[in-house]
Length: 74
Image (cartoon, rainbow, N blue to C red; front, side, top):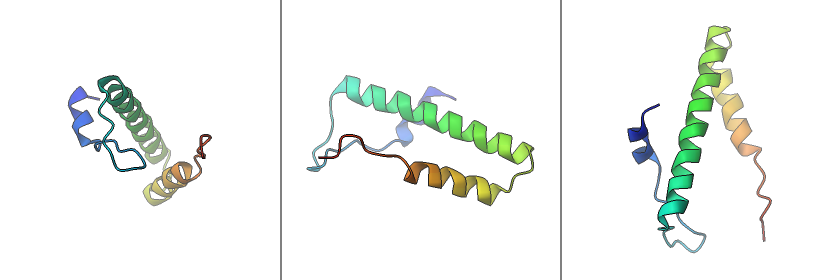
């Protein structure tokens, strides 16, 4: 994956709507999302090569995201 893809990520916002502007925090978020995107792309391609339905792969990836738990809920 090229580093230029980081521009697709949103401006990160806090719950109050203010922008997360710390350079290091934004850098970590960019790196994390670049890695997640590459892993998800690899999983999709593997599934397609194994003749799994593209629709099912996309639904499974969406379900994966929906199953994530916030351990810091207040």
